[in-house]
Image 1: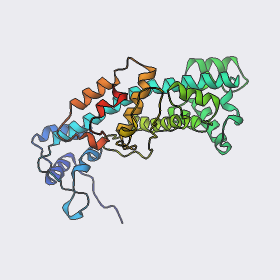
Image 2 (image 1 turned 30 degrees about the vertical axis):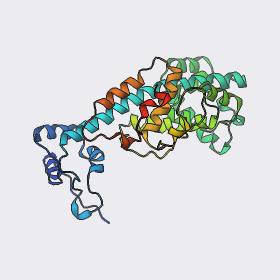
Image 3 (image 1 turned 180 degrees about the vertical axis):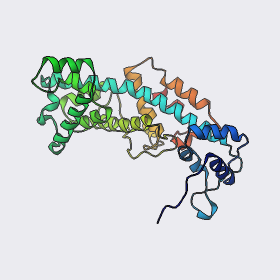
Image 4 (image 1 turned 135 degrees about the horizontal axis):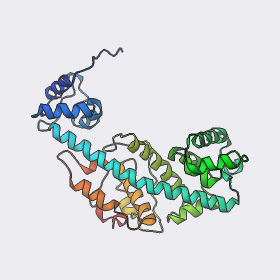
Length: 307
């Protein structure tokens, strides 16, 4: 099928939205928003409230009382939530780097353990992983990397405590994903987070890296079903969520991720204000925001992890 739709001017975009049933009283204000937030970016926030099944209905809004301002409020809520999550994941990322650098360096007594094939369980990924690591080192403009290059010629790559600090979170998660999560240093790291099963931490790290990418690229996280399902532990060293409440959680929605972030944050940053900021964002809700869309169960504030 050939795509034949023509581009629309902002005026035509407003006309189409009004035709579909969106209430727009201040067209000048709407024009300003659409000049800075693309029509199709906002489409992600209008889509759930439109009839997208009946082609003859031209994506008409299912309710006749939805205002343009409601869509903007929902967009702004999502933006604030992304910023909060991104900031929290930065702390978690730094803690993970620190722990993996330290525990594997001490356990192997090898400054360049990340280049040792023997620590990886899938050697088919080794060459591509090393290429990614070398690429991140080349692109780094950190002073400590430049100092190493000027002073040392062998090995070519800097030691783990320098190299792993230059890796993108995505490449760091790929490296960690290829480590044996049953190894002694990996299990020790997991236990430092109160996780008795190290495969839980492996899953969380991958999920966090995916979520971080959504936040970094300003993608919608409200009402999204993530392709990575979080593994939720029934047994943890620190307060998390009891088994009965775990059964209420959709593991592919943002609430599950928020619980895991809150759990880790309480360990690495006991004075964290993550919960208070989350409540502040939620309390500033708009007419269209329904916490169920993000997987929040009723009474979630009473879960141990949020106390």
